[in-house]
Amino acid sequence: MIHAPVMLAEVCAALDPKAGERMVDCTFGAGGYSQALLESAEIHLLGLDRDPTVKPHAEALAARFGDRFSFAQTPFSDLEAAIAAQNWDGVDGVVLDIGVSSMQIDNAERGFSFMRDGPLDMRMGDSGPSAADAVNTLDAAALVAIFRIFGEERGARRAAAAIVEARKEAPILTTGALAQLMASVLGKGWQKIHPATRVFQALRIYINDELGELGRALQAAERALRPGGRLVVVSFHSLEDRIVKQFFRLRAEAPSTGSRHIPVGDVAAFSPAFTLLGRKAVKPGADEVGTNPRARSARLRAGVRSETAPISTNDLDFPGIPDLGTVEAL
Ligand SMILES: C[S@@+](CC[C@H](N)C(=O)[O-])C[C@H]1O[C@@H](n2cnc3c(N)ncnc32)[C@H](O)[C@@H]1O
View (cartoon, rainbow, N blue to C red):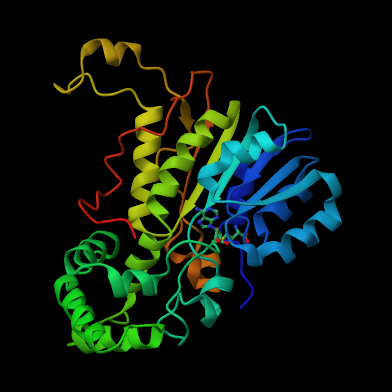
């Protein structure tokens, strides 16, 4: 299936590109957003993606839009370095469309899908440990934490115990083997979704540090955006949307004077880094959900950057980012 850009009209409206502006599409994918933005105004656009397989799509846009478009293969948390490499001193728009693309899910070799047998990989980029490394080396407590926190899997203990038992016989190396094992321990009773869904989601988030990447990218975007610049984020599940919501709340809304945890001086001194474009997340229209089921869970949040000095480091304390506790690094 070709990747259909989700909430494209809403994204373009929120980014509102104007001639001469500079924008970054942090999740280039098949280039759906980038193409629409480049078509809608004479802007310069930098596309980022950690997945090297998106390069043919980037080459197609480079051939069409010349020096108005460039691409860098990098995690989006490195947004500021990528912008500096363009010799840009700031940008007017940043968009993130979080998650996996249909190209990644549909390719069995990438190991994202429990519906297609392939190597248990799940890396969006081309380096670092794979899901097979996690499943075959982490101890039971770490697996439980990952499945519970990133998958919200109620059978996390059973899932981890089954993995630890099974790998004594032979390493778990394929999506099919893991999906079957999860079906055997989590599949009792009627369920709306495949019993392996949450375990696969959890491993994918862990392997790609998806929530950490998102938290760092939001803070980097705050530093990179010029006053008046727009930050637009589309997310697909509640763990991500919670982080985006918390970020905008912390950076756009004065802390409540009623809170005994916040000194009065801090409330008076608060100056918002963003003005929110709408208080609530925007959802896709019924027509889009009807034609593209992947859009169903999409939520868009956006803000306009103010003159306020940005936070200087990636140390914003997000209540929304779950803590994995003592899980060792792979
Ligand atoms: C949902 S797709 C984006 C689709 C795109 N908006 C389009 O219209 O074609 C998400 C893309 O973001 C990339 N991605 C996810 N997390 C990333 C990260 N931390 N850094 C860079 N790219 C990332 C994935 O590799 C994938 O290609």
